[in-house]
Image 1: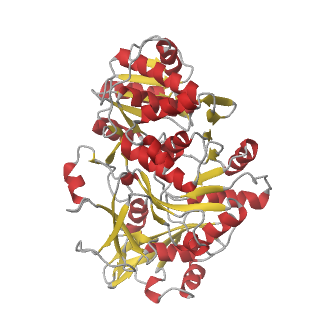
Image 2: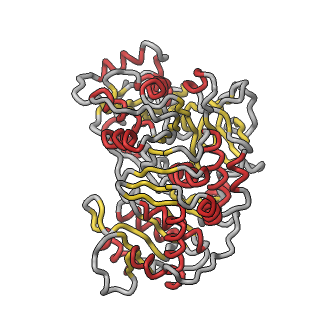
Image 3: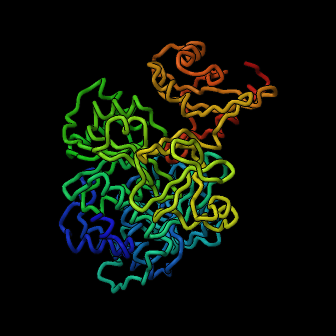
Length: 532
């Protein structure tokens, strides 16, 4: 594969430098009215790296990146790569305890953050961290505050200015060196720091966009979270490897998103299911010229067959479905644009090149094709391990080096992967197995249901009961019994939700996934004594 061959034996910084040398004047980043060429991004990253080195930031030091979808995030990640430092992407929506935990656990020595964003004073927040986290030495802020009074806080633009023209020789970094520590969403427990190498990220990003058919002429949109593994990998690095252009939107809002696609004639659209759902609803209210879109990827959460069909018919003609995990540096399987229509609707495609998948029984034995079991994966994107957690790491790898994903799936005779649900999300009701994904797919088809999450709640007789948590369409009037009746038409009786609870919105992780544990915790005390 051409793009994968391009990044073999290269680091993230080396890949950018090669692209800047080849396509220096080509536009890499578009953010509002600002445009940055590959040469400008490379030059600014070099200048920032020179200034950070002057402050004492060295190879293998950890640098937190706590920024929205701003170009400064991307420049900072390439600066870190030139230093051989390790980036720790952070969600600006994290709470103070979450940030404190991740910064302390990663032993970050510097953080690049916004001065203020979405009503939060990050400058004040991080000034507090400088006093409470001994490893944290420097704060680099993006904004316009006057910071003359503190020799540990610097402005992003000032560091770039002071680093311009300063002699800088990039560190001798190896493809096998750690590039990023990404903290998992923690839907099933405490966040863990996933350590990914330059090779993990680059090869997976290149294989993803190569499979998609990305070229230098493409304009990519839909990287709604630069701190997430998909935004970081196929989004930023994949666009760079292909020599394409990436359009950033500070915060996702469907009407603005469609206007941006129309304005910049975007050709490729990435997104989680929620992004596409809200855009489709916006299209019902107003028309946009989206004829430039030719392909895209939906990933990050389960997607119903009906939704895939609608996106392909109304928004993005050659949309591909991908299966992506933080521990595998993002994509490990995806559909191809020329796959049969039914494969786009009912599978997440085939493994990327050099990715090996197998289906395992709960005892670790390998299952034949068409069997349901836990998905195991081995390949170039699989993580080094969980940072500073060798015990947790050893639990998720088998003796053959396959990462046990915790997801339930099946490989069909043609090698396509079918996802059923999470092994840990499996609901055992009265001895019968209920996979939330199957019930959710049925409920997503209900015209009054905007979003749904199916969880198991403790029950003293049945062990667990099935609870459907529903976010209704705005203005819709629907009852729990109507939801249950809808399920009875196609689902076995033990799969029909015992309980239906309505929500205005769900608690979400930074990557847009539903916090199922939190939902279960909210409902358990109230519902544990109920009987279906």
